[in-house]
Every structure is written in structure tokens, then in C-alpha cells.
Length: 137
Image 1: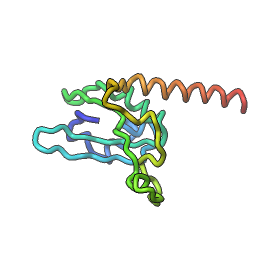
Image 2 (image 1 turned 30 degrees about the horizontal axis):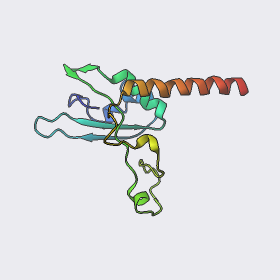
Image 3 (image 1 turned 180 degrees about the vertical axis):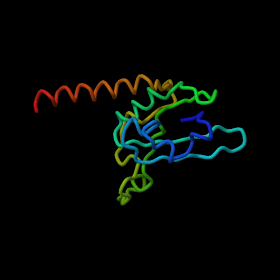
């Protein structure tokens, strides 16, 4: 997220149920401090993609002390161990360990990501899965 006021951009505050904690189980929060006129950057990692999607849909375009908050999915990158063809021993490594075509972009393709569309798609899939599980269980 970008655009949070300094009073909110604190891990202890963001974990609370009134803030980012209401959307799901938070695995990690990283707050990049402001440098000069740069906005404060905050990275919130959730346990499940549907939780991140709910947070993005809820928080994006919100205003905090006249600051326009922008929420979006973080960049995905491959694990350095994976790229060196080594085993990764980090328990909660947040990076990719398999090649995935959906994360590859090429110069000849138009690069535009509609975060809201992705979030709605993830939430819709979760709803379908929940309905299916109710039927079979």
C-alpha cells in the first residue's frame, strides 16, 4: 500500500482488527520508512490470497488524513535458491519455487494489471469452492 499517514503506517497498529487484521491472518508486515517526499510503502502478507484480495478491494482508493491510499498486489519474484537450482530451506519463504507462466511478461505484450479484477476473481473462486464444499460435506 502507498499513501498511509505516518500515524497509521506502524506494524502494531496495522495488525489490529480495526485495520488490516480484519481481512485475515497476517503473516508479515513490512513498513518502508519515508525518505524525503516519498510515500510510506507498506507490505502486508496474508495467509491466503482471498484475504489479500478482500483487503485490496476494501482499502484501495480510501482516504487517510487527505492521503489517497492505493492498495495492490506486490510484485512476485522467484526465490534466489530456486534460480540457482538449490533447495530452499526458509520455512516461510514468500517467493516462487516453480516456473509459472502467469507471472511471466514479455516486451511485446501490453503490461497492465487490473488489481480489482484479479481480487474479484480470487474471491469468486473462493465462494464457488465454499459452496462446493458445503454440498459434498
